[in-house]
Amino acid sequence: MSDLKLSENTFDLTPKSLEQAMQYSELIAGSNIVPKDFKNKPGDILIAIQMGNELGLKPLQSLQNIAVINGRPTMWGDSVIALVRGSSKCEWIKETFDSQNMTATCVAKRVGGDPETRTFSMDDATQAGLANKQGPWKQYPKRMLQLRARAFAVRDVFADVISGLAIREEVQDYQNKPIHRGPVERVVDPGVSATDNLLNRLVPPERTPTEPATPAPLPDDADDLCRAAHAIGDAQTTAELKTIANPLCQKLTGKEQDIARQMYVDKKTNLTRQE
Image 1 (cartoon, rainbow, N blue to C red):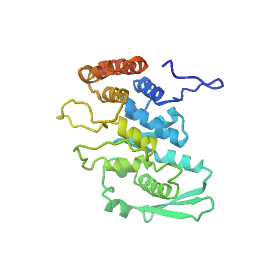
Image 2: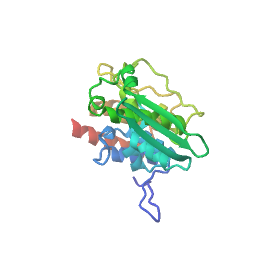
Image 3: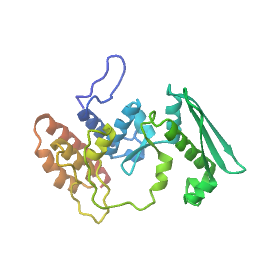
Image 4: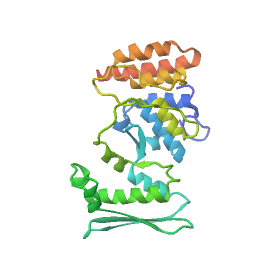
């Protein structure tokens, strides 16, 4: 962690490069200050930090407000509306709820624009197969309806403010749907955002327990440090770490090997605790 610099005026561990972000992610992945969804997941932490950076958030703010679901960065509904209301592009947002018709309404107005209204009712939830879902939809239906109306309004009216970010409460409703497990082509495209490129480079695809422990596919032009970091983050046991990641680390030289070896040691420590 010697490469991470502190500013002269404030205590700030914000990474200034990809290498520093990778070190930072590995360091805090095993700590108790990160939400459980990020525990021992340095790849997800790296994505959240990058996404938060694009939104103007500090690293720890990003980890508290961003959740990575199926490799996609999302933001909690309360955090999204706070981010939008703090933007100079937002004039106001108003939310109401009609208990008689069980309909949530969100009206959003950009500066210089007309108010736009989005609604989500219990009839909409029933049609979407949400009304009878166990969990929040059964326990707090009014709240879930409110969050859906809010998600539609914010994403439609302030897509630029949230950089097209999805709403966590909305995306989590898709988790129980079938997931395609076939090969996925992951290509680094210079025309997309830095977050999407990081997703393509560093997030391993999900694998079923019956799949062999082999390195996740990477683009042909991925650099050696990226391959090593990818393998370290994907390792589920110390045996996998030794068999797959260690040879990749040995191929590196100089500073890159030092970075990879530190990531390797930290991951091994975390896996050993779990085993």
